[in-house]
Length: 403
Ligand code: CA
Picture 1 (cartoon, rainbow, N blue to C red):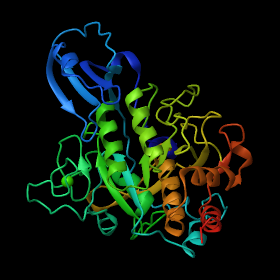
Picture 2 (picture 1 turned 45 degrees about the vertical axis):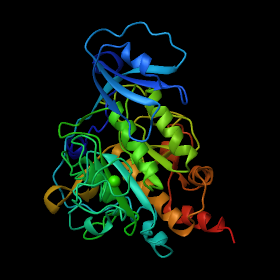
Picture 3 (picture 1 turned 135 degrees about the vertical axis):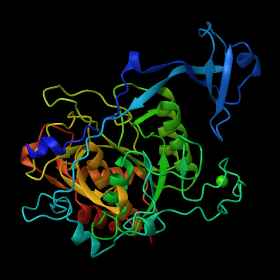
Picture 4 (picture 1 turned 90 degrees about the vertical axis):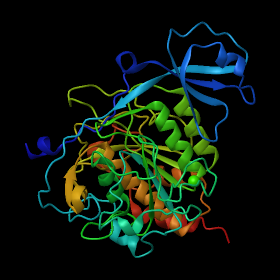
């Protein structure tokens, strides 16, 4: 029963019909083919750019989408609303079993920390509801954009964002990506908390990118903006504890851009709203790029979390039930879900890059698919049936150091 109370259903649903935002579309032009003719032929009431992506535009129409059959256009898709539900449980005084545990259902974090606790040169972008960046266990591990002078109203580094000194809030379009739901703060702590609770990589840096609002709602277009920001501003890893049932071409292309720029994309495999529901295809987790690694959730007894999605397309398993991490007001609390499992893997990837910054996304993925223990209780539920292991992954990363 305690488990049920502490579950949080952190799946963002992207279910096709009712989640389309009426009148809003992402238009993808072919390379170099953006045309004002096409845009002026549409009943546009508002147009929003994707900074640095001249071939993309988001439009709001004040009438129906006319039939467009123009050579310049690659695709047009509706903007979807992305939502999540959170049921936060209070802190109940349990340990951080996922890091180290007497039954050895854990990722062997202390053994990995004898080799590395992470590097401040490795930046993990947390694409989420924001991060409580002043939290006492997180504040020393927040990325700083050294090229941006705080609060001078100038885009000093000319990346399209004014005063983006620690990340960006795509909900309010400002440089203060504070957390409106506590979800992103919990995720960030699992990766890099340093204090009374510890993250997997307690010396790595977090880049907070808020694209989910205080109601747990967002859009595919803001997800796309956050992905491009992370890649263009130096993240090595992206943690994505969000997803849903609908494919988006615009998100697919943004993830491909991350892949092509050697940025690793860790993504939760989605929760089920009801344990009796069957498995389903979850995006962006199911996107098939070398940089994409999807993560299902297990409990401390080594069994699948009954709320975790399953499927042979899901790559690995990580702890994701009763996970202790950073919370609102400088506190710590427990939360559950595949949202909590993904950041364990992001933390491990951060440790791998700390000992070998030259790893390719293909190498990172191969290491994660081939290390870790095959737990008997989870065989058949995911591709590898493996619980990720930090020390094995770090040792394999070390073996690949180029001299
Ligand atoms: Ca800037």
